[in-house]
Image (cartoon, rainbow, N blue to C red; front, side, top):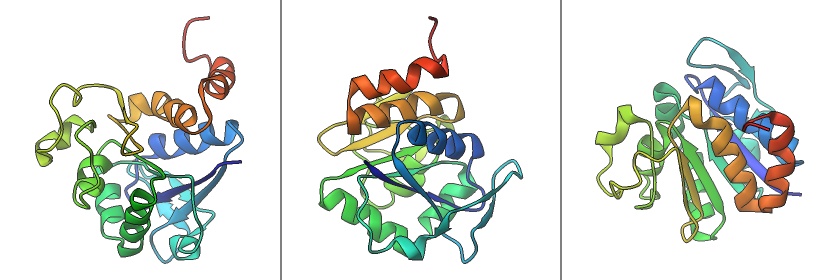
Length: 188
């Protein structure tokens, strides 16, 4: 079983968070949703309240196969302000384990930590905040940098694709297809 950490914060984009959490759980992954604040209750970008499984501080000593950051401009700023999350992400990269980010988080969190590879994408509203990304990738819906073990995506409309790609990166095409088929993501 794969262990996944999804940190959330006030201002997190709820479609991206819930879509990723739900899709990865459909794959049988053990997903821990952790608040970067001192309370498990988080108010998302559209005022939807999500209750995390725990606080991020309770996750500091656990090793994850994947850390996934939802976006939302304010949510990404709040994630970026977490020193503990920065340490966990840097450790994830150094130990060559997968991490991913969608929407504003590639630019606001990963780029600021020096973890955003040249093969990446992000939400159009924050493209101007990054200068290391190859322009041929910036408009792609989901981008995988297998060497850096990083997956990035554009925003709420690409969240299911993003989550399915995360499954494929960790567990392969067969499991991705098993999860994807009943979700009716393509014409069948």
